[in-house]
Image 1 (cartoon, rainbow, N blue to C red):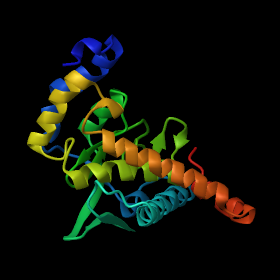
Image 2 (cartoon, rainbow, N blue to C red):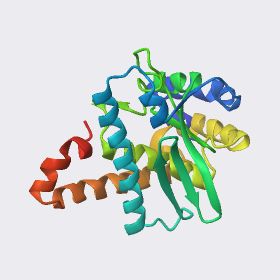
Image 3 (tube, rainbow, N blue to C red):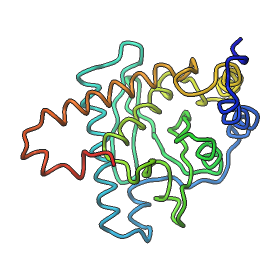
Image 4 (spheres, rainbow, N blue to C red):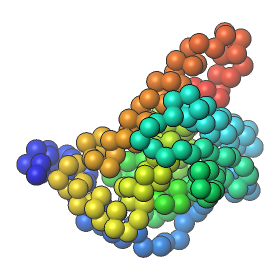
Length: 229
């Protein structure tokens, strides 16, 4: 057991989630984030087009990364992007891979995290504003709107959880996740998170090297899409 090794800050962050965590497995009202829904909102068109372009580019980057550096410990998968959101393509079929802004996502964000995996995708939380379909922790990071690298890392991280069926992707795995969170803490130290963080880190390094290797003219033309602000 490692509970004695946890500092007060880590305990303060994780205990509310560990105690309330099972409530996250109960269905609740939510806003599913799709390009179609974002376009139908009152968000300015220029901001919508920019953010959806980054999302589409992120999916393309994730697929390119998986083509070049397919992980041995994760079953094969790819992603597809369209007006109704993302699809997770497996060897044995295709499923929706939704992003939803939910009441539980608010708890996740208030606890210092960005998103939390589900069997059908992942949940995020509101970050201010009156448009939950856009003003959420999927599109916005600590430095403003996420670029394609930031979105790609987040999407890949959660997709790894879904493919491995660990973390909070199911009722019993969720209970196990929260119990281990009490002893191990969160982030990369949690046994369920190790591979997801490892893959996200490799992706970010790969994406950064790829950006630096682009011809200067390509960098100028794609800087708004590829820079994670």
